[in-house]
Amino acid sequence: MTDDARGFHKPVRRPAELFDRLFAADDPAEVSRVAHSTARALVARVREEPDAAVVERLVAFTDRNGIDDIAELWSRSPAKSLPGTLWRLYLLQLMVHDDPQTAAMTYERGRIELRSADPVVAGAPTPAGPDELVGLIDLILRGVFVGDFAVALERAAAFCRVQASGASHVADDYEGTESDRASAFTTRALRLSDYAGDLAAAAALWRRDALV
View 1 (tube, rainbow, N blue to C red):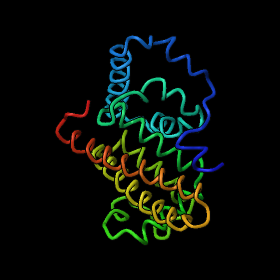
View 2 (view 1 turned 135 degrees about the vertical axis):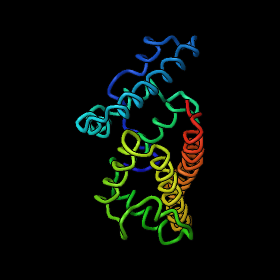
View 3 (view 1 turned 180 degrees about the horizontal axis):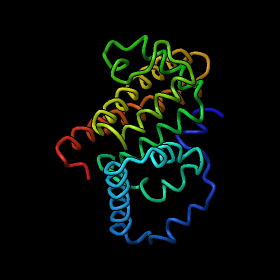
View 4 (view 1 turned 90 degrees about the horizontal axis):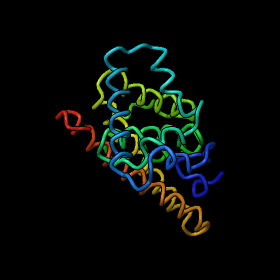
């Protein structure tokens, strides 16, 4: 499946209308309230009593259940909010799990091209293959529930910056021969760059006890 066809999420396995049946579309305040309350309750409960089995189930959630269940709760939330942050982290995880070969290729290209400490902050081995990228993104998501939440977000932001750099350079490679593929990688790079900024901002908000 190509990047432009896939985006960052798989086809949902439940009807999109379910969200509107649960929380009426004309009541955005209720949608927002549920999104924020579920995100707060989930993170607080697991971090207060970090049961290893529960953490592993949360890390593996999208593999077992798809992204639609999470989307019903968090996808409409602002980027710099707790539910919006969790939504972006799960999308990043799904991007890697869904196509680890492409993720590894863009990450390695970004690591080579990017002149910053981001590859070190993200924490992938050198070089990083598909299995290593899957392990890294799962480790970053696990850090949301155990350890320093802000550090996990900073690692995710660094990961996005490396990936964005790699995708941008790959787009340049294809520009003269495969314009559609170049466009798909450009879109991927822009999205990852946006996510990097959102996650870095969320880390700063968390440190101020202001990520809600």
